[in-house]
Length: 422
Image 1 (cartoon, helix red, strand yellow):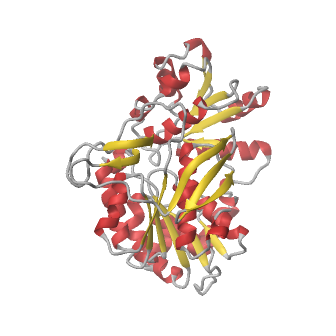
Image 2: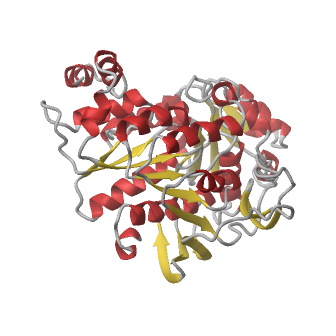
Image 3: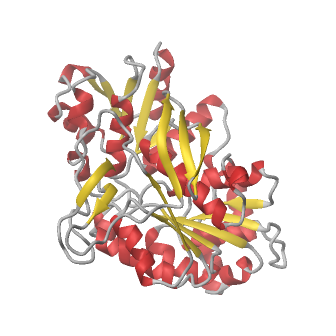
């Protein structure tokens, strides 16, 4: 595994998955052997796991802890195995005491059985990559399988997601709920809900408030199933800027004012889940408090649109990069379920790029953006040159493979490190 990794690096490749895949062919229990003695927090869910994992890792580093994480975003079992292998000695002994691991929902069953995590964080469940996962119930089943293979883990569950919160009723694990106890945006697009009816009895939910999509203060008027009281709660958004905000966050009812370097609604959820995860890991509250945007499904995309709607920089430029590779999901019809009409009512121009740039451009046209204001630039080098000529700030919205490819090109042009190098 190490030899393959270093050979790929010499060839200028990332070497994130193939080494682990080869190692697992030789020994299917290789990851279990490598992870013994490493206390691990695993983060899964449809949206937010990459950002949350990076925040956890940064917090651990800031606290002086010896920790590693799968910084490349390779979140299937082969990529995670590679990460553990390169962080171990030649004899397989771990060189780090702690690990923060992002894990794909579909891989969670196998990964948790191998790692036996100390903490398992579940962010949310949305429709995502229908060609891979099907409907949300299948995603929830995948997560439940991972939970069942994590008998010693403290679970950190999103109290505002009725599907995620229901997991607590089915297991004996210790649970820490986290959530956002207020509305996030003064102006918000109307989201499609992936959970309109009670997961327990089938009655339509009532909501005291909605943060976005199906997240918020849900309650069933029939059987009484309702949002559990979160131990970690964002109670108010005290200040919001284009690149940061100030939160009033409480832990067990004790409030603190917490400045954070993120602006978007889903990032506020990420902060809450990170605090919950670090508390479950055994760190005290005081240590737990410490813009290239990713779109991959309607719920996450709508949150970027919400952010742009509330952006104080009215001249902010917009670039949309859409791919349809296997890791993205080959069906891009989800872009029609996102609320682009809301942002096209305010913006008259955008640049579209990626393998499905024409589809993205057509969606913006249907949403009301003038065709004359929509440009298509397939070549990332040409796109970066164009951005460099702009005398204004620009938000780049991209799905997964598009984000990696664009970031890699930008790193090459600007002399930055590759994505696998941090």
